[in-house]
Amino acid sequence: MCEECNHDYSAPEENNAIYICPHCHTYADYICEYGYGPITPCSIFLGDTKIAKIKGCLSYHLESYILNINQDLQKGYKDLEVYKEAVDVIVKKLKL
Image (cartoon, rainbow, N blue to C red):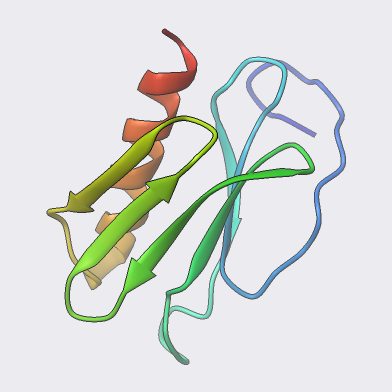
């Protein structure tokens, strides 16, 4: 359930995933192996639809054919900053 709009939705679980509410297009949650393994590849879901992926190891790249995004990310591994940067890019694109 989205804490922003209280919309209930389903989404698949993956080891590294970011979830965006399909109703209000805000960041909802993430699942991550941060501290225990790699944080990539990381799938980004809009509800139950995979809309993007973060790839990379020392440098990161955001890719989404659905949203026409293919760009390098500037943030890094620490504090999952790369996840936050990717969410910002995706949410801005969804709100256009």
